[in-house]
Structure formats: C-alpha cells, structure tokens
Length: 98
Image 1 (cartoon, rainbow, N blue to C red):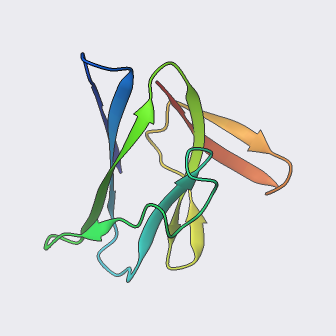
Image 2: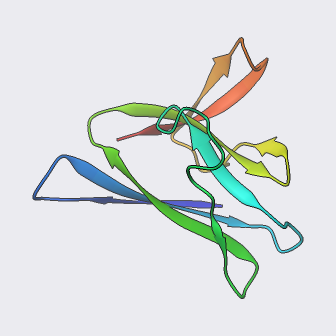
C-alpha cells in the first residue's frame, strides 16, 4: 500500500495517488469524506503487476477520512497518516492530512 502526495504550487490542491497491491482482486475503489463514500467516484485501475492505482485531486489544508473497498470488503491503508474511530461504521478509518 502506498500514498503519494504531490502539492501544486499554483493552487491549493494536492494530487494524491493511491496504490494498493491486490493481484487477486477484481475491483478496488477508494472512498472517503472527499467523495461522499461513493465507490463509483474513485475506482482504481488495475496495472499489469496486479497493483490498483488512481489519483484524486484534493484541497490542501484539510484532513480526509478514507478506506479502500476491495471486492466489497473495506480495507484500511497501513500507510495512512492517522486513524479515526467511526461510530457509524463501528471501525477505524484511515486519515489523510494535507
């Protein structure tokens, strides 16, 4: 798992690239407070090496909760900046600090 942050100098935006190795998976999405937890808004593309990858533009200066959905199962990123308990889900979400 990997999260790469690229801050733009021209505007308050950070390009965040999510990478998740999941060779056996058929579909992987990243969901969070930045896309209303909608798995259709950030579907990751599967690369030849079995890693799913995608980039999302997010506003700098904010924190966002997120998770991956791997074939219908919610998974946290081990490289998240922090973790936050979510009573609604009854589990922790990863936190991205920009």
